[in-house]
Structures are given as C-alpha cells and as structure tokens.
Length: 158
Image 1 (tube, rainbow, N blue to C red):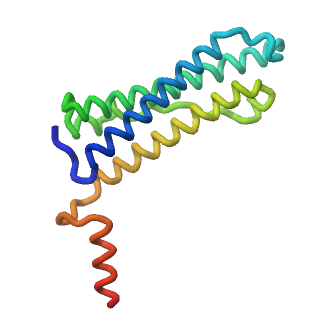
Image 2 (cartoon, rainbow, N blue to C red; image 1 turned 180 degrees about the horizontal axis):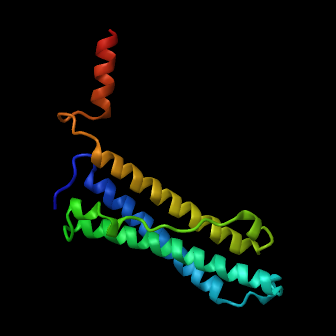
Image 3 (cartoon, helix red, strand yellow; image 1 turned 60 degrees about the vertical axis):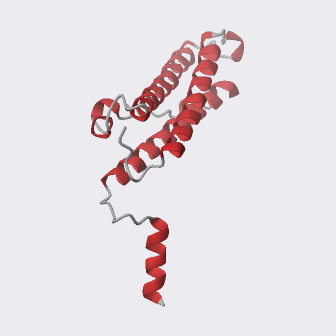
C-alpha cells in the first residue's frame, strides 16, 4: 500500500479505528433506543411521532455514511484500494441532512442526545475528510513539514 507522505500510517489507523468503534457503538445505541417503545416519552401527538421517526432516520443515515466512509479508509489501509480510488466520489462521505433544533426541542433527552452525538460525529468525520483532501492536494514540499517551515521562518527573521 502506498502511504501518502502527509499521513502517518499508525496515526491514521488509530484515528479510523477509534472513530469506527464510536460509530458502531452509537449505531447500536440508536437502534436500541429508536426501536424501543417511545410512547412513555410523551410522543402521543401524531405529528411529533412523524418528526421523531424522521429524526431517527436522519441519525441512522448519518451513522451509516460515517461507517461507510470509515470502511473505505480501512480498505485503503489494507491496500485493497489505492489512494486515487479512495479520493473518488464512491468513497467520499455521503451527504446527510441536518436536524432543525426547533423540531427536536420537545423530544426526550435521550433522543436529543443521540441526534446531537450523531451530528457531531458526522461533522468531525467531514472535517477529517476535508483536511485529508486538502493535505492530499498540497504540493509536496521537498520533505519539509510544519516544523521545518517554522524553523525556516525563524531563520529568515534572525
């Protein structure tokens, strides 16, 4: 497997693995919560029940997009796909709808917590993807990194 020069393989593996565990645990928690009975949580209004069902689908969609992206990263780590293939649209994080806080303000605390956690995880993975993409397209600087750039700046000042 060709490791891109901007990415430490060990750090990438640990980051992807920890995000994967977090996503899988959250998916299991969401499944258990949303599949459970919610009548006792004050969702007897039919419109609120529909909103609740929509939000549960949004949570599931966010988590599945994150998990799919992380599985692509794992495939790249194992050499099953190359760097060019990984940057293709097929392996990018899928688009997921955000939740309107006004819709969920009267949801039970557990539901709001799961919704917020799934949004947070999705946003973190999206930032990671964007950062990796920016680093991938940055021109290679003759082996120098951020520390070397700082030292070069200090040398020009003094």
